[in-house]
Length: 264
Image (cartoon, rainbow, N blue to C red; front, side, top):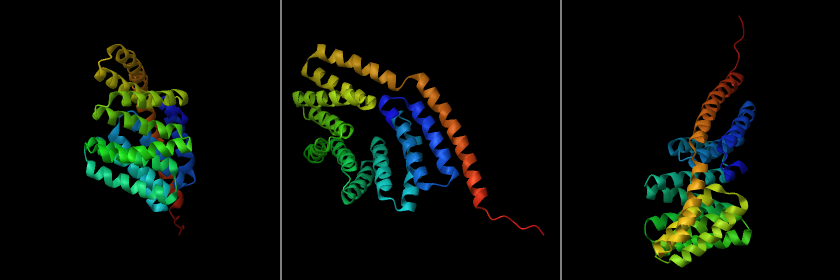
């Protein structure tokens, strides 16, 4: 969803509602699978992690029912990220590896970048820096080879954070400068915010407080744009509308599939 990149989550949710209504009306499970995943992503970006997990689980159930490997990988990776945030690193790794295996089998470079990046970030959290780099570097290479700008931005950010952990601050700055250039180009506000935050930390660690201040201001501006109070209120209101309409649509589908009784 292009509106995700711009941080316009209420608009994205509006389109999800419309899409779900259409898919549910014809009982299109693959459409419902993708819509649930999109709703999970929207809630993830707004840090509504419990709600995001609910949608990812629904997407995974539908993907497994359809034996849709791409859908399974997508949901597994997204769920793994939430387990990592929650501190359950072992479960996160299990889900990430499941997604990576499928992506490699399907020869899906976009999915492989995401899976490699996620596993690399996980090992970095575990302070296994060499292993982390073993996953992040191939993700960067694939992103460059495929000219996948959004995909490339994420392992660059992760590598920048890894270099900070290793106290290799100039290398961290280089990674973040690349990710900033990319995310500004494609208007990926969520990733741009993370890039600003990372490069601020790197410059601050180097003692370059003037540069750190410049990027810190950019980070605050991007963060406020992403997580404004008004935007969260709109997102919540739209979620209520979505949930209500989804329940109505599900009831209609059930009624249509239920055999009618013959009159005596």
